[in-house]
Length: 101
Image 1 (cartoon, one colour):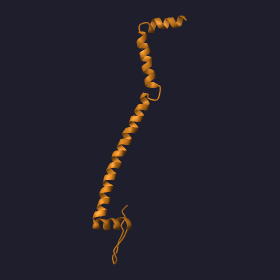
Image 2: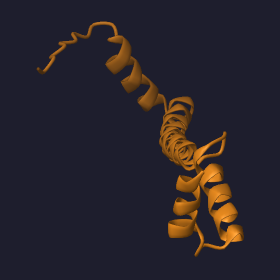
Image 3: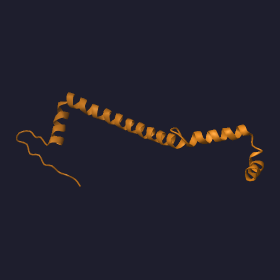
Image 4: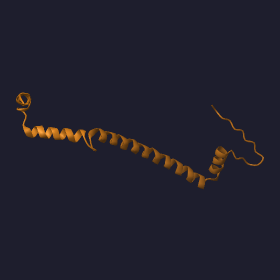
């Protein structure tokens, strides 16, 4: 029992008990439980990465919807798309496919 009294007299007697309880409560709050600092940080990182993905896919949707609109409205664009993607050709026409490395 004398060790506890010595420890208390040496270190803890100068600290107010309310401060000690407050510090202990804050330490437990920030390190233990479902909303500790590490988990909050990882969740925030995940949210930021998902927001970047959302922006990327929104830009991709805009580009693809513009291409789709062009295909619906422009006959020459539709022919060009069919030639490039599906290797279609007109009658009496030769098509040469050149693939670069």
